[in-house]
Length: 349
Figure 1 (spheres, rainbow, N blue to C red):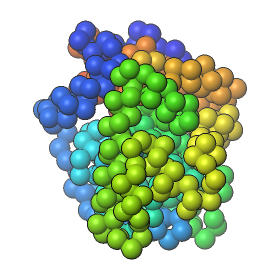
Figure 2 (figure 1 turned 180 degrees about the horizontal axis):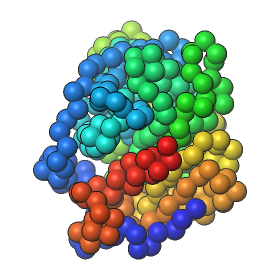
Figure 3 (figure 1 turned 135 degrees about the vertical axis):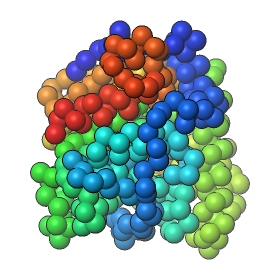
Figure 4 (figure 1 turned 180 degrees about the vertical axis):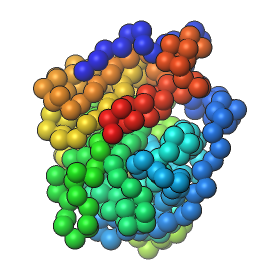
């Protein structure tokens, strides 16, 4: 476990978690392609079969003589089309010699077009990671396989590592072929975080924006599967909790959102993970309850396989580094989080 007050430093104007988060959402999204030199990999589209035989849309790129494969997805809303932060990883990973598999997780993007099955915050997505990995192996993607994601996608990747303990024999995938996971600002406790957000001055606006994104996700699924989702229930959604209450918990067999959040919470999993796992977590992340940090430290302290790095700055999945920070790490660009993840994966092969 590492506390990093100095090894990551942002530009002066981003030394505040909310500012970093807003800049990522409304500033960097317009200029990110100018910040990196790596081109877009030669992806091809692939429909994988996930747990419960759910079709999952993905994109795959395999370089010559790949040294491993990185499999990842994004956060609570979005699609492969607009999640440019994930595209940065794809470009950098492919250029570094890794096969890349990126996918629209349940209920999102083209996966939501293929199936009306909604998200489960890791309860099935962890199994999806495993099944996608087995199919990627059959396509020629080599081990070791590394799972990654950010925000809620980081939570899903952690569930994927948990599922390495239960890989079905018929998949033709051995747990030794899974290298581990590396995640940025993973969601770790939905119940506590949502309570924090709705009571925080700025947090309530962030929560509202996410809830609107989830509501739009539901309407997108309704557009493609009108018989499988109730439009009246969608209309009632005004918050993230209401989205889960109206559309998620009944199909998963839970009686309350609190029960659902407790079941999908990855914090209790951390002490028992059996694969190397890197967690980058910003102390000034405005989306997560600060009270989670000491519990995160306790959950990781007795597991030598977890490399926990809590930074003073970073915001929510921001981690744009200052010029001095880039020189310190000899980084080619400002994307400190992905640079550390690729460095860590390379060192753990």
